[in-house]
Amino acid sequence: MTSPGGGRVAGKVVLITGAARGQGRHQAVGLAEQGADILALDLCADIDSVPYPLATPDELDETAKLVAATGRRVVALRVDVRERADLRRAIAEGVAELGRLDVVVAQAGITALGAELPRTAWTDTVDVNLVGVVNTVHAALPYLGVGASVIATGSLVALRPRRAYDEAGPGSAGYKYAKLALAHYVHELATVLAPECIRVNAVHPTNVDTPMLQNDSIYRQFRRDLEQPTRADAEGVFGVLHPMPTPFVDAADITHAVLYLASDESRYVTGMQLRVDAGGYLTVNEFRP
Image (tube, rainbow, N blue to C red):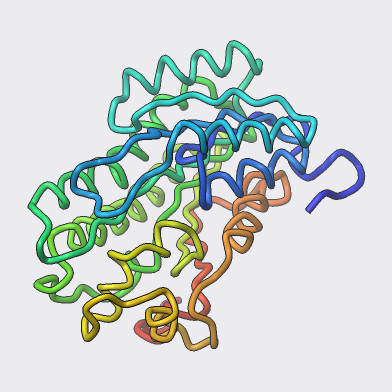
């Protein structure tokens, strides 16, 4: 991903939540390769209602090592995006060490699917996927100036029609609500900040080949006909969402979109709902001018 001339985000400082693994780690390393210093934040602990293991402190340490190996500076801190006061302290510490803040990538997210899960699956999902983004952006805003970029991770789920959640459980309903509300939030915040030349955009991925997708709880949702479905069983039907023949996209595909929105190449792009979805939106939505 490295390019000559110092990189597409050279000299910028980028905050990324959910940076310990998956999309967050890939974005941290990818933007560092393009010249950015990184403030990497992650909870690094499990949440009771989430039926798969979340990232660990060791994984956040590994992200920091990978960023440092590119030659860029990195500050890696454990913080819960549900706690705005903690975010304020972490961002202040990062800015004090890295000197500024230019880009916010609100990437942290969970998915808690299953009819057997308690109603806290709904509240936890909304708290992380919506409130956590709002907390991150609002805690970072005092440091952002002209040319800054805010990027929120949405989901293809936000752009698809509502469906019954009796089989997928309360966490599925919470995920849909959080990501749809996030899309609206991005639209309105972009309108407010445009006169200050601060851009706000959302990236809406479909299935991404990360631990959030590749775990037993997701396999069971896609293959309810099997008692213990495997990755191979689930991957055979992941692609039902897509007219393009792929079960999922790679983390790199999302990083490319984030890199564009973080760079000055997108200096006049704001309020964008950028879909990286293998055409998944097209199968369920009419054209809207």
